Image (cartoon, rainbow, N blue to C red):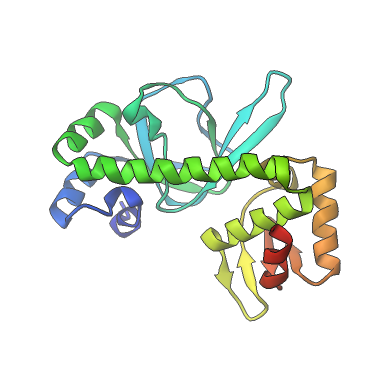
Length: 225
């Protein structure tokens, strides 16, 4: 188990070394290839996961088959945490969009651990609050921001979390297909592709396979607002 990667998760921020090792000892490591579903929306869930490598998308599907991408999570981030506070049906489907490694812990074991360490619960609540804040911002953007603005904002958010500085700019290996990027923005693939083509022609971005290089962050930040 990659102890260093796990310790980067917000869940462990408030733990001393002894407590962290105790929690790690109760966690189970798993590996899922790109495209594999970790859990489905609606199924009963009682485990929390921490991503130690790779990326996972959280999505919901409507009755007519349309999919909305709620979030893209990477190393150190938590998913399935609602099972700790309210065990029940999963509220989203979690799918690996890159070869991914995780460590998981069952609800009962995590509850026992948190009962003796309330600071861990506070850390998890802060993580939930950040997720909720991001969701609220996304809902506001759907109402008040046009598609190119939402695309610019999504690229900047992905860059902040997954970007790597290069000589040309910031390389963002987001591992999303064009359809998934459109789902994340909440627009059609055609409309999102049109916005990306416009950004490319202006010299703001350079498109790569499942990645994008941000060449003019300042212009993208202006367009995002």
